[in-house]
Image (cartoon, one colour):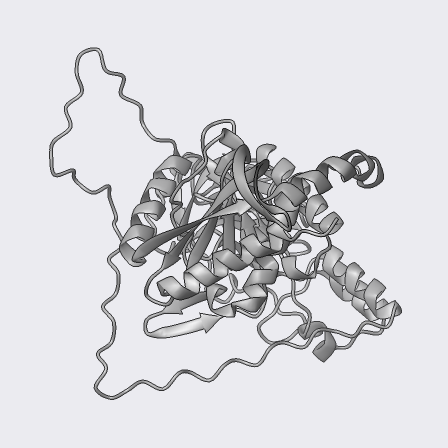
Length: 448
């Protein structure tokens, strides 16, 4: 019986596990490609995981509520057109509650190892799987093996989806060629006398407080939900990994406020989305990241990985008090209209629990808008493995001294604070200060 392993996907660069909230299928169900299999919760996203193949669910290896490490097999799918032996069929119908509890260790399958390997289609590369739908469309469009292998997928575990191939065919008709994969950078030379950095310990359980916490008779004891537990771990890890420094600047956004007030109604009617301050703030941040590319990087030991793409995460607060950070890909290439539409789309998807794995992957920098809660200054924690995060405060009217040809005058201006928390391993105070000041300059000189 040829089977396909469904594994816990990696729903973010710093995510190592996910909690299965609910299964949408049961053993014995026949499913189609892209049918939802289960819903998973992590620190960054709640996502519905689709099936990359069509077939029959023969085994479910993790129960609802289990926290499973990335890469661990959670279900087995018998591929379409493959008939299993009777003995295997009877074994595969075991209920989910008979499955071994997920412990973060790889799960051993009772089927032969050769049978559980993903199907390799002759039209695909030796290590990449394509669905029949994708192969059919590629064949119809005259797309060969090498060209197909060069395409980047946005589906489950990087799979090339039907939407990806259709979009590429449409671009090809317009004369846009396939993107070539970027060459791998040569590893940085290591000095012989330089010791290897010590690995950062990853806590397997909550740290014990130095002072015991005792709940009183009238106190309410509340267990953290799975997402809050992961947020707790990730924020603690980030403070241990990165030496945080925060710098703050005050920004006169009077021109920006007037521009928005003048254009917001026409923009809403034309674009169908609201013109919020986050769109110009994101554009200004993307420009500053191009000016100071070191801010758009990550750290691996003693190596700095400077990212080419500018993918900006936008922190979204949910009604249940948790936080999710969907990512705007290639933000530097989007117009104000494109940014507004993208921010509105991912924010709505986040609040409706409809984000997909690709929506929260690949971030290189994060913006958090605590000003929406009337806060003026905060010191945000870096979203690993990034090296900086920008905090946006509330806009307030303040009296300010303005220089004019006739002399200094006091006027009412719209002001806000920007706070940049950065990783002092790779960003010093001068660079961090220059960067956040550049963002402020773009906003203060906003053209209307």
